[in-house]
Image 1 (cartoon, rainbow, N blue to C red):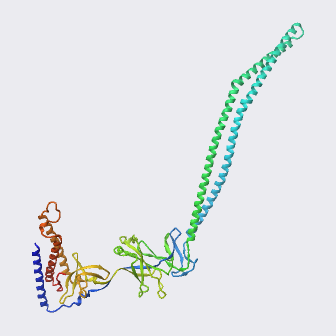
Image 2: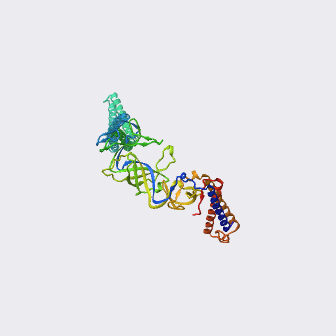
Length: 567
């Protein structure tokens, strides 16, 4: 199908639609009632793009008091919210009974650890003194062993040898004298001057003297061959052993000292740990009583549970470690904390102006500026774990003397101004309908609404910017799908079928005409450029839509809506 044929068919369809429209108008004979469409006027004027979310007031600067006990506990008593307190006043009391019991146990452990430390200290002193004594004893034994060896080598041995040699010499002289006396007695006996028994006595004396000589000689031999080597060996070994014993005692004393020092260090560390535990428990006990560090108004901090429920700070409630409980806010500067959905967070930047409408003061507006935007989402509840929201903070302008007193915890509606323009053509959001990737509006005409394709720009919660397709002063139908459901359904089917047919036609044409060598672009034999092809498609689309709308009107008779000429 070429371009001329498509244009011709479109023209015929348009003429048929106009003829039918005139015929139908003549048949009806009167304009239909337009009020049932609840029309709204397309206007030009100021246009604001805003993001609205619920928020909660808070102080810019606050002293936050939390559960510093390190354990989960319960609230025993607390002052009413809003109470004005002075520095040092008791605000909230947590359950202290378990902490008091733990403190008593820690006190007992500290006492035992201190006793063990003192024992280890005294034991170290004993070991040091014992080591000194053992080393001195070993050194003395070494010295005595060396002296014993020297004494024997240089004194006792010589003394014993000389004694034995002297005894041998005396024995020999005694033997010589006895022999002379015996010989003299024998001569005298022969002469008759002595009796035989005297001679016998002299003979016995000679024998005894000989025995003494032999004994002295043998004693000297034993000294040289046995006593001296044995004694020297014993004394030398004793000296060597005492030398080794000195080293052994030194090693033993060193080990004993190391053991005593290790026991003392272990006792010291144990004492430090127990004292630290006692101090920590003492701080926990002190933390069960929460006092005001400064004057201010008591504000209790609510926490959101994993189930998405608010957990109030009240008597008997369970609180967790590090859970914020009390705020003492500085009411001179107030901010709004809000959670922005991920689909809108890209529009929010610091410096954007904002307006807060506090529920407690519905007739007042409080202006401020976005001061912080979180870069990571906050955790959602377990019921909505897929929900991603980002925290944004708006600091409100300082309050004047006549302004109401804002308090942390109040709920407000926060409106952040993303964009503001002075003269924008705009239509109500509910007047625009999207069909087949295009957007349409139904405009009131003298006899019946007509469908127009429109191009839109930015949008806010109630209106949308109109770039083309509508003019200021025209009235558009609200909720078109309610009034023209059949026509829009038929249009959606035809736009889908048309798009499919055009795509198949292009593919078939491309398959029939092979590309020229070295040119992978669209075939030149089609006779149109890419832009011309696009224009052709647009013309075909307009013609088809015009024809289709007329046919749809005939078939459904749907409120007599007709379509305008191509915008």
